[in-house]
Image (tube, rainbow, N blue to C red):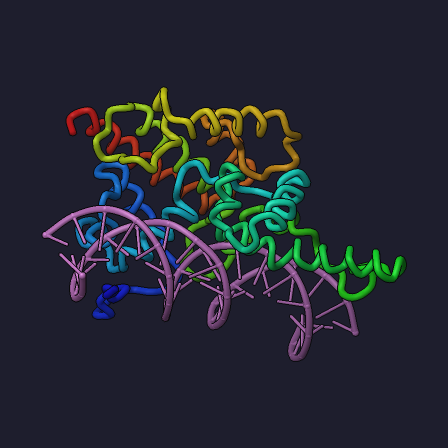
Length: 258
DNA sequence: AACGTAGTCAACCGCACGGTC
DNA sequence: AGACCGTGCGGTTGACTACGT
């Protein structure tokens, strides 16, 4: 089977996505969907390969991404599912609404694997204060305030802060028009009445909302997104996402005509 | 205060698969 | 039937940050 080259290396950008690129990608997908990832960057005027766009969308910009800490339940699920499925991250992700395979993979390699090994070690030695000694690191939660990359000089989107909230409200609302021809199959987070994933998603929301607020640094209630986001995002973050949202609003107005 | 180390995570890479021509 | 194309997946890497010394 022949394989198309990932992308024409000619002049295509790599590395972290800039807020502007995110904006362009989100706006384009809102308007036209992503029927053809390969053609998308060209159509959107992005100097990225389709693969990169897809990854960015799937792992970061998609509105149904659930940001914030993995709950104990989620971590347990990952451990259990990994036990059953092995390294089939996408399959595991499919059972954890709002989580991406990439994220799960990262969590596994950075947290759970070690924890499991430590647990096994404990069981074996019935002693050894696993992780008790050594360097004390802040818990993962402490890092998820959104300031991490936003503070960096690199023009990277303010990912962990308000991203999901804003794209959520913007794209989801767009999806809620329900008739956008631009959002094909995959956009199951829209409120398509017969979408199975939507039911899933709904339970996800209720489940999420029933959880203690401290578990998240990102508001899970779409309509409250901005208010809560404001409390956790830096001014720069807010400014950026506000602009994204406002432009998304413009896009939405155009949608019914599409 | 500066430096070194370890942890985190977004993004890239290459392969495999399924669909289409 | 076979080649081509697009997409999805898993592994890996590099940039960045926080913490400890």
